[in-house]
Length: 167
Image (cartoon, rainbow, N blue to C red; front, side, top):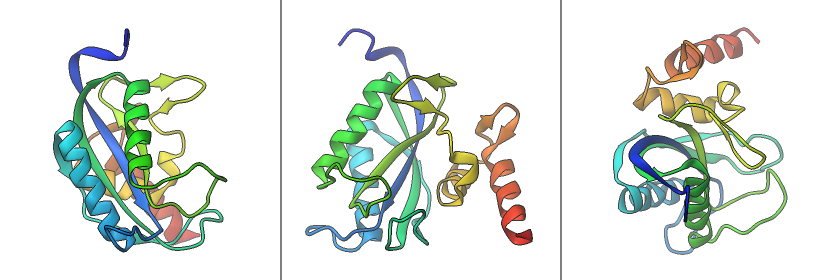
């Protein structure tokens, strides 16, 4: 357990997605709502964005329900990632191919401790500035969170929306 618990809790921004129904919770928006409740139970929820339905990215097939949540935890980022993967498994997520339909996907988008770079984890999420389905919900609940140097979630979401409107 050494190195897994921090001296003080940090705030984590968690991206939440689902594009497969769950036997207990139902359709993807209800799965996301249940995941938000589980994050609240496990860590203490500060805030959660509205749940949005977005077109699937890559080859994931079905549309996704997405949201973002802010939670507080004393876990260091690698341990937080392991805890999130355990929640995914509890919801029935199984390993498989990339971009496959999934009942639940939890990602660390950012954390108040700054940048993390390792073989298994990069925080802020390396594709966050290019993913409206993650950036939009984060900007709704933490618009001033600095993601890339001076650039905030609000700024990056606005920039991405402008790019999409032009293209």
